[in-house]
Length: 456
Image 1 (tube, one colour):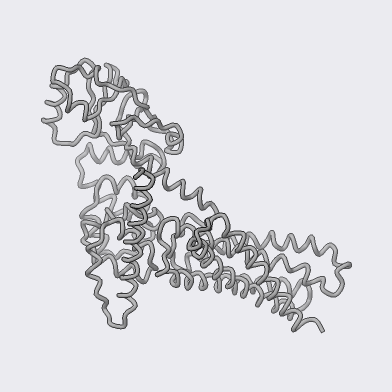
Image 2 (cartoon, rainbow, N blue to C red):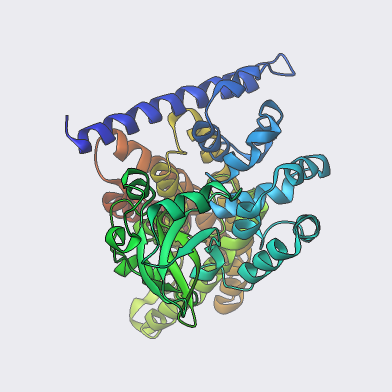
């Protein structure tokens, strides 16, 4: 079996386990007998638990955490999207935050400092020795995507003419675990890297210069995006040296770079997402507010298109108002649908959207569509009523926009899931089908209602 086949097989196995876990949890929570017996959740590994929590709405998530031992909290959070962690932390009780405080480490402080309660960061720093606290403060002075933010200072510096025997002695007498061994000259400048495996296998009298390998050195102020593009992986070296002012100050793990690449590749693959701050089950008020900003922006361009058509008002005669306003109805449905489509595609890409939670997502999206459709529909109805001096016309376009928004949300939620079942790429075909649906529903609703109530 090829490596690609093995990877595909492993992914299918994980997908199957995740879907089974999701179905079991939803079945337990939907039973009339309360409280639900969720003790089985503790048997799942951290990857499935992280995926499970991100696949559930807020009201369901709160039942999952009590089933997990507090020692696992951070391991689970590390496997989630950053914005999901941010939202979860804001929802945690003080007791849960206290439990997190008990198990927090340097890794969590560095990675999540921007979203952790200030008190948690301050307490942790106060508990560290002076050197460790200073190193953490230095790391937090960098931007979230700068190399210096993720530098581990637990490295062993040695001269090239030193022997393997001497290095082994130094390693055995130090309590801290070193992540890398780097060769430096008298000025602290990088001369090469020795892998732990080579050190273990070499004879005691071997000079380190004989084992040293040339690997890429990063500057502490570089951005992860820059080093990810030029990274040259050397077998046996999971860490790369980081320098400041020409001297080695520590190392950065390749896993940090790989994680960044994975997150950004998802953003590129689903670039139409309404916001980086929304996951599959961001609460309705929050999600509606974020999307309303872009819907309002789109409204301005939609009215501009209508104004251009309105320049030909004299030629359009009796149906002039309808012709002018048709793009508004179609455009509002289209942009609302594309936002829902992006969230559904993200859910599929992250394995969060399954048949078992499809109804939950549909319910959420319909609520958002109803909220934004009603709010913006009223605004549009008011403008149209004043513009054409016709309250009935304003009411017709209001109803049409609400109906089209609901149709867009429903179709955009279902389309990618159905296409995936049909083994058609939803990222490619989804927007085409969605546009067709919103145009047809929008025009039929608007022109149909107008024909019934406005045209004699």
